[in-house]
Length: 206
Image (cartoon, rainbow, N blue to C red; front, side, top):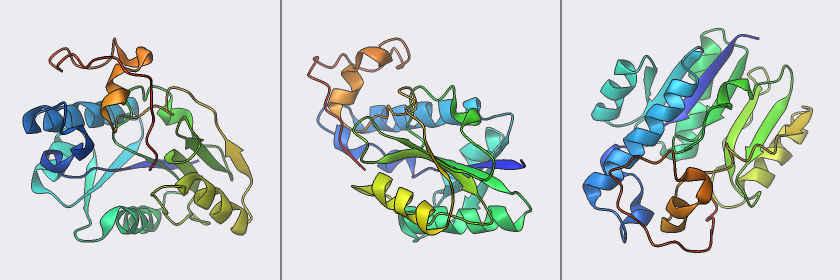
């Protein structure tokens, strides 16, 4: 397979708005950048593309060895679909699409499976943290609450075999304050983050 990776990255200054109660704007920006750098590093051996509509993100992506695809005013789903079309036009035959806020992305580069749609849902199997599919039968992006079921339905409609990968590391992301207290993340979050009081782990869907 000739595999590419697509990572949508919003402006760091606008990221992690649901953490406003516990992090300052600078801390949210730094955290978003830190997580995105980890994702790009984990797939550095592959061809990596970042879809964005922010000049700082574009420069950052290129500094980290990725190619930036400008997708202004398209929203998340439109930006991903536009990026998928651009990557297919370059001759790649398979793609991995990953969110940029995965704190444990070490297994990301190994998600792709030939002629198969692979999905890594979040911990409550509602959102789609990672998906991979052959570019001759692309899966339209349908992010938002319930996206995991929608993506699986789209893969079935395209006649693709489906692999649901229960990867508990890739299933973790950081959206709300409770995510910052997850026991699996204590050693990987940057030391400059403030201490967040521990709460029962509650995962919000996307």
